[in-house]
Length: 269
Figure 1 (cartoon, rainbow, N blue to C red):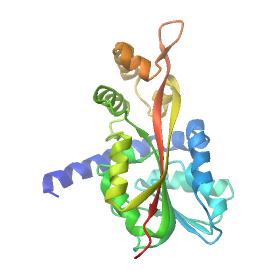
Figure 2 (spheres, helix red, strand yellow):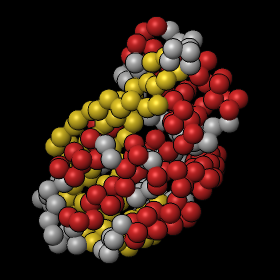
Figure 3 (cartoon, rainbow, N blue to C red):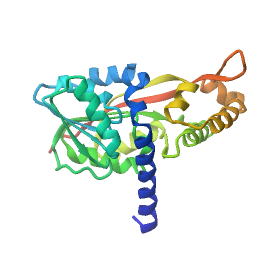
């Protein structure tokens, strides 16, 4: 990696830390993140065993760790941002979780030995990673042979126009956003890391515009400009993202795609 590229990635990670230091409490209290069909399915797919040691990467508000903790012996909860990790710790302890340990960690350079974990989860975070492919390589490294990686993230449609639109909107709302990848890109990341995809599911999630922008603490002026951009988009774009307008002409909500991938590390030959 060139020095310029490395500096660029460090700058991106600094943006992530600034964003989540500022918005941590909102992510803990978010009803959308706390309970949704994708999280329920992640738990259903996990093939958990009581002796398992799990790792939750980029935990955010800690909701995935909370869902997984009852099914495993231990869960290591990580995040890049100290303030966010502390908020997740306080939340999990307040919910009675007793089998969690907490560690600052960069998803692209995990501070764990090879084959340390039976299960790894990462939910609605990788669009903040400067190098998502490298993060998947790190997951494969720390997974035990036969272990599972359960990934959930917002994705972009395969159509280039729709891809550009959703990533533009995401970056506008949250400057720490790097990229919502397509399902094909995620499948390639898994294959390159030696993870066999057992299952893949997509979900359509509707987001209330006021709540979505409030979570990011988007200033009112930028909120209005972004709203105008979305409402002025081509009809085909508005139709795909199910852009819904209130009676007063303001943007009410829109719908995005989310991917759940279940990858299995190959058994040693």
